[in-house]
Amino acid sequence: ECNRHIKFDRLLRRAEALGFDAVATGHHARVVQRPDGTRRLARGVDAAKDQSYVLYMLGQEALAKVMLPVGDMTKARVRALAADLGLRTAAKPDSTDVCFIRRGERDSFLAERMETTPARVVDTSGRLLGETRSVQMVTLGQRKGLGIGGQERPVYVVDTDVATGVVTVGARSDLLTDHQDLRDVTWAGEPARGPVLVQTSAHGTPRPATLDGTRVRWQAPQQRVAPGQSLVFYEGPEVVGGGIAA
Image (cartoon, rainbow, N blue to C red):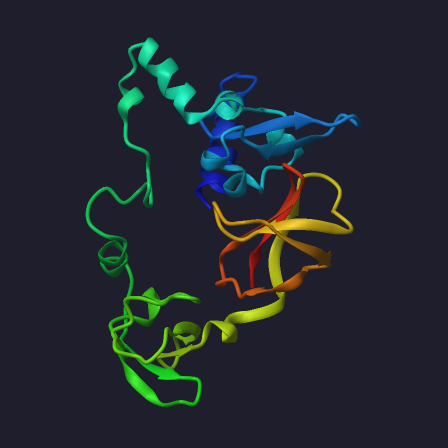
């Protein structure tokens, strides 16, 4: 939610208060203008670095005031230009983790700031398989780090119950669903109708679906999305909206 509330809310308001016309960021995405005068966010030229997924919440007001100058370039081209200009960022490693965690691992960072409780790990029949250190650190679809090694076949987290401290694991097929309910749906302009492509992670493969109010109906069964994860709707390379898995 940093992009929603900090980079493209407070920063834009601050820039406007200081008399600036626009804010430029280094995101790999583009803003395109449609024939009717409205704007849409679109994928960056460098598909491997595309960040349109994390910016889906930008509406018309924000898109009119945002400049994304590197969206039309590959990352290699950006690095080459930075090197030509003598910028130290030319050789800066790519960011691969949570940007605000400067030291240590994600789990230790969170454990210092929230209560964590052990959880029993059971299969779909309720049989106890073991115990994991923190139910709060387990996510839907997780396979590793559950403390239940030695199973006959791969198992995945298919449900978590924080209140009772129970993590349920099962086969990958137990994660499949034909729909996904959403909350906090936002649109770049008018709500989309008809078929769209839906992406469920920053660099995931977009899957065909139709939109039914706040429900995504998959063309073919897909893995359930963890609550709180974004689902972003595309028409070709353009973002038409998105929401959060309920």
